[in-house]
Amino acid sequence: MNIITPIRSLEELEMLISNGADELYCGLKTREWDEIFSESLWMNRRSPNQANITSLKDLETLISAAHENAVKVSITLNAPFYPKNGMAYLLTLCGRLADMGVDALIVSDLNLLVELSRLNLALRIHLSSLGACFNSFSVPLYKSLGVKRVILPRQLTLPEIKAIVTKHRDDMEFEVFAVNDGCYFEESFCQTSHTLGAFCLTDWSITPLGTDSPGTGDETVYPDLKKRLAHFKTYLWYQNNCGSSFQQDGLPNGPCSLCQFGDFRDWGVTAVKLVGREASFHRKMGSLQLVKAVRDKALQTQNRDRIIDYARQLRQTPEYCDSGYMCYFRKH
Amino acid sequence: MKGSNMEIARHWVGGGIDNESVQPWESLKAFFSESDFYRQDIKDIVSQPDRIYIGDEFCPKRLPDVKGLKNQLKAADQKGLPVTLLTPVLTDGGIKACGKLFETFHQWDHAAEVVVNDLGVLLYLKQTFPGFNLSMGRIFNKGFKDPRLDKKNITSAAAATCFNDYSFQHANMRGLVKNLGIQRFEQDLFPHADLDPDALAMNGSGFDVSVYFPFGYVTTGRACITAGMNGRAGAKFNFSAGCHAPCTTHRFKLNHPGHGPDLLQNGNTIFYPYTASMLGHLLKSAETHGVRLVWQGGLA
Image (cartoon, rainbow over all chains, first blue to last red; front, side, top):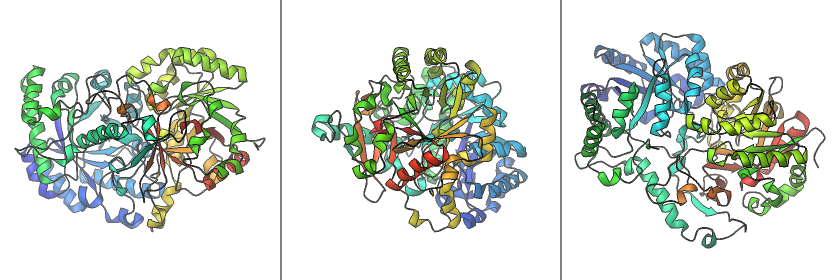
């Protein structure tokens, strides 16, 4: 089970490789894209300046160093939709990335997938979690479009992941989320833009529309609406990396699937993913150390309970783990 | 007044039988000016539907059970109206659980219309019930919908052009789904797009088009704030847990100064209301360009 880790600058490269990253993924900010859209449109789901490699020269250096260490490099082109007037540049860029030795593109837009399947570039296509593979029935279609790996969405349960992976593990690779950055809405179906800030974290004023009696006030719909909404805020806090906090030992808090690595190993999951390209150097390092420790434990022992105990021990926050909101993937 | 070329469908939201006979027009006032509705005769138009939509695009828990489906089909039959079944994203377990529902719908009409919002569901239905007429649901139609966006802040002409662009406009998407047997695209009116009836109707594409109104969807997911208002702490927002569908009675308005229009939260999904000019444009397009309109006033 590989560990795939985000990177946003060359400064992180040595740290990530020395701490055990098997694969790296990054986004790009390019002058040509910005010239077309005047920075009004992001090329991928994360902020151009805070989460992306900003020079193709740096990318070449990154690829070279990564390959010297047998580490593969993927590029995220994971916007849910690319407009027509950006498509020609994107395809040119993809060709250039293939020539530079990029190992894979992470893609979700069906239009782009179709285009790439025609180009047959010398790199692999990985379906982003935004591609919304929620069942095993869709896998053959993605395969027919040249997809070699499916990154499964966060909003699946463990049995649902098992159903997909075990049915197709012989003809498709699968990657699952390991730590960081929950998502309240399913990002595959969210048509908001991160350029305006996270929609789900906006402090909306929520008022009831009433039940049978239109215009009914809070008191008859939900007498304790504020209390009920407070639970929602708590849930969002967990999704948002427990308020972007850290444990006392410096390891990061946030949603994860560490306890489930034994299952992932047994089902044939190819890679576990650290989320957060824009995260700080320290969050990335801590996240990687955490994931590597549990992944290595999962490779050493067949006993799943020991893996779970080890993960919880590393987490040092049993109250968070027991909250019911820390796991990406619930048991049922 | 409903035009002779206009095709109107009504979604029986929430699994009932013509629940819009008790249509909460009052709740719609939270989002629309009453004069807009009456001026455009919407109330009159939607009272004469040509088709019924049942099921749900956003939540499997809002699909009818077999008994409920039969009741809905019987009611539609009594009105002499054809029925379209909306389906949401489904997991393997969800597809299996819907087997009898699909079978019952298939028995009712081997060539009935089904809207799919998931590629796996599409492939499953194509293989299992090849007679169904499949439509591509609006969840597939990605574009720029964020209601918080103020177009005045977009100065790049290229970026502004993107507001008129969405997945179903692309030749690749059309070619892909045509090969999968899709005949119709279901979509929303995009909030920042120019009002172009030819583009909306996809003239010359060979596809039929449906447009939902008076709301478009912004975002959705399996975690549900409405269901999450119930249940014990820690067990909330568990999308595979049972649900007693509080969304059928509890809807919410979302507001934030400077973040665009008031929004509707219905169950796990957030919707934006169409403006008066969007509604006017839509009604005109339905009459002149043969776009089917799907009324979802019952969402509010």
